Image (tube, rainbow, N blue to C red; front, side, top):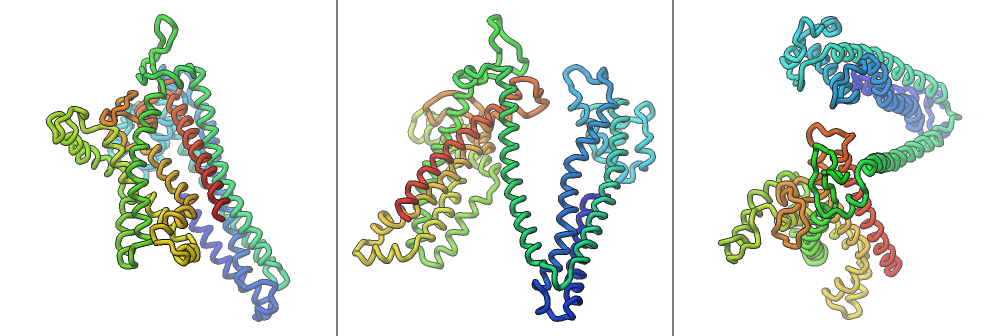
Length: 498
């Protein structure tokens, strides 16, 4: 049974439980809610939570564990000698899952029956052609052991899916019966419901924290694997980025790949600084005007128009950089251009990406700073004006210092957004990894190289692929340092103005 149907059935049972739980509580109080310990809706909510929460938690855990169980059972069907050189059992299992999904698609499309999908053989049928007819593209012909494993995968998925549906619905019905039996006038439904909601909030917070921990640990473990294969000193201090996907070492035992992060880190910081130099003044001045000078009509029109910039996809910004801003800068700073200088050789450059990224970041700085400035108490403005200060003096000496912690947070958000941007960099700054002070040279960033290192058939046993995790870990540490610095600034000025 599809997961969506299971969720709908559980929610329907929860809605029914809410109604019958409330009705039973009212019946036990002879229809007078004053005789109930809690409001009637609490009794219905108690039944609803008893139906949905345990069953949904079990459903999530089942969906996480089931693929692992099936993979462990199916992978034993693939003999070690069937794993070709340059491949791995994990890659073959990916092919197994792809073929299994293709068979399901073919059955759903009516191209073959379920029984035929379970009995089909590569000796008599071109599996790749049959699945391609229903829109399932496979990179190579299906080998017999892969097909056999895929058929077993489908069988186990269907069996476990049926068991999952029975168990989940059974848990929901059991929860409904238990909670319904407790729905009487003396039952403290409000206390139970509030405790359950508090537990759900704690669970949500824990999931967010554990997700962060999981991301960091995955980066750490893969970074450690990378440094086992590639010297850490070369990674941090090598001024050259020149990966060789063939791997190997030279006559001195040094790796042929040059995976120094310095040019990537320099390009990241250079482009981010230019973007912030564009976004912070424009965004902050726009926020000051909208919050302190603009009338209601102007503000109602201008603020949504500025925030529209935040909704434009980054690929559109990248195309704007490639097709408009880059050629425009060449016409000004290129050979034979308006200034008749030869500073810029092509449209892809640090300046191109920095300017466009700065435009993209304007709404981040403007909108957040505007809300923060508006949150400064009006009494502070009135007191300053009452002492004889002008409006501009009040803004400079009272409003902005009071709003500074929030403004720093807005700038930090813009900086983090700039450091993590990829598409604008790829299309606007180019792919050259170099150390240069010239803002009109093409450069690249850490995020762009993370994408390029993991594009295609990446061998995760090679340093050329694992370096992406080391790059990600370095970027994480840089962002963490920015957060710590911003937190220090925020606390310092908050203590001063509170």
